[in-house]
Amino acid sequence: MKTIDVDVAIIGAGSAGLTARRGALKEGKSVLMIESGPYGTTCARVGCMPSKLLISAAEAAFHAEHSDVFGVRSTVVVDGPAVMERVRKERDRFAGGVVSSVDEIPENEKLRGHARFLSDTSLDVDGTKVQAKAVVIATGSSNWIPKQLQVLSKTLLTSDTIFEIPDLPRSMVVFGSGVIGLELGQAMHRLGVRVVVLDPMEGLGFLKDPEVRESAISILGKEFPLHLNADIQSVEETSDGAHVVWATKDGVVHEETFEKALVATGRRPNLGSLGLENTSVELDDKGIPKFDPRTMQIADLPIFIAGDANNQKALLHEAADEGHIAGSNAALFPNVRAGLRRTELMVVFTDPQIAVVGPGYSGFEAGEWEEGSIDYASQGRARVMAQNRGLVKIYGTRRCGFLAGAEMVGPRVEHTAHLLAWAVQSRMRVQQTLEMPFYHPVVEEGIRTALRDLAKALKMNELPCQGDDLRDGPGT
Ligand SMILES: Cc1cc2nc3c(=O)[nH]c(=O)nc-3n(C[C@H](O)[C@H](O)[C@H](O)COP(=O)(O)OP(=O)(O)OC[C@H]3O[C@@H](n4cnc5c(N)ncnc54)[C@H](O)[C@@H]3O)c2cc1C
Ligand SMILES: NC(=O)c1ccc[n+]([C@@H]2O[C@H](COP(=O)([O-])OP(=O)(O)OC[C@H]3O[C@@H](n4cnc5c(N)ncnc54)[C@H](O)[C@@H]3O)[C@@H](O)[C@H]2O)c1
Image 1: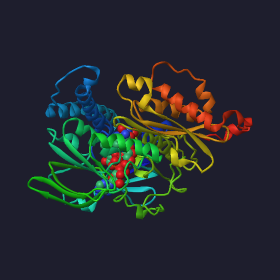
Image 2: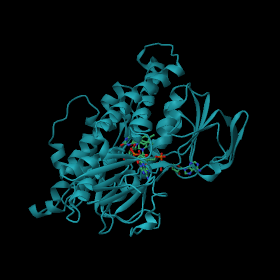
Image 3: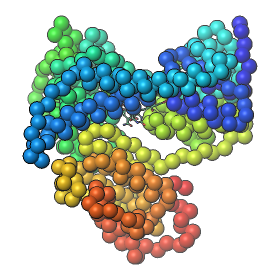
Image 4: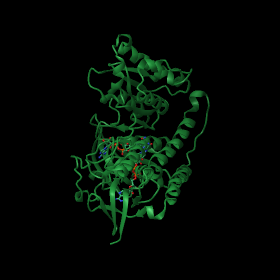
């Protein structure tokens, strides 16, 4: 058996694996990156980028169709093949950029094949043995298809296949009201596809604030059928398509046949065929290795885990940060150090957009925090643009009045969420954020209203706060 000796072996050439490689190289160590699938990363090939391309087409159709409110009349024709062609063309450009960067990696620093642990520091890659001083697991995640939906084949779409369809279907049932189901379901609806979204659970699990969640459900549910707490009674594939019978919360039974079925029921880390049983890695009750999120190290082993593989924050920027930390620490093993973890930030690209900043509503102990809010119904700029829908809640700590996080659904919150995340990470107090400039008329003025509301709830002038208390702010 051929053996390759290396300082750091990285399993997976996705977003986490590629930054892990850079992190390890910076420390002057030799690196081998192993990849079993196509190069180009999940994000660029079948994730972030093609989904946002489809959403942009849907936004164009929606705005053209809804211009009447401004007195502008138009007739809209959605050319399905042209929509999908642009998605693929631009997607190929993004993924091609990543592939070119991988092409530039010297041949002796990369290996094609499926990696499987033989011990903590050795791997089998399709018959080649890799002996490493440390290993980074950056194997990503895959779509999970529940048993009930495994009967689907010809009609089945997942995020891996939906961007390959040559034309838009006439109808599509979406299983799952998570981020993927909502983003792609709304986009397809806006492109003229008859869409129904079904979820047996409460749905929109990424929102924890009941009022913000309710606002998002109400807004999205007015635009397309969004059936949460649905009892999905039967799913079968017939010659006409996917035949689904379900009962809604009110007990009404529905029965429909759809040309396509998008299964967006969650993703699971790619750990199953890694041979972890041959290592000293201890798994939690979900089968995920226990690791330190500051160093990405698994126990005190020479094994590190980054990106979707660790099942924590399945987001691109987190995968990149985690990869970098894991790669440098693998190179420095056993002298690992804590890396920078940023304030949490998540944006869902529905319309209106949804965002979560910091630990969100569920991140605080009772009695430790206050909230301020704004309903976008009457917000000036939002009304000007006829996008006056949504609710923003901002949270602050009672102790010293630190800005702590937000949950929001509203116009252009991708931007306001960034401002708030930067302020949280900078450990700003609510009062300090109100001292910042606000232009007029902008949607950020809505955030100022919520911040004022929060300052009032915190009774800012009465808050005792020693200089030392700054050490205890969010982000420490
Ligand atoms: C439809 C969709 C939309 C998304 N939109 C966004 C968004 O808008 N914003 C955002 O922040 N995030 C988004 N995400 C999430 C984001 O894409 C992921 O969090 C990110 O791509 C994870 O990167 P990764 O490096 O962990 O995994 P990947 O990029 O998947 O890389 C893992 C690699 O490991 C390889 N591999 C697996 N097992 C082995 C093995 N045993 N041996 C060798 N190689 C192996 C795989 O082939 C793969 O190439 C989206 C995801 C999807 C699916
Ligand atoms: N904008 C973004 O940042 C973005 C976009 C897309 C994906 N992502 C990442 O991808 C990850 C995976 O997204 P996802 O939407 O697949 O997963 P998810 O975990 O967010 O949602 C899955 C949903 O499927 C539902 N479900 C489970 N079984 C079902 C069944 N049998 N029938 C119908 N529904 C069922 C669940 O109740 C849940 O609501 C996300 O956690 C996110 O981090 C991020």
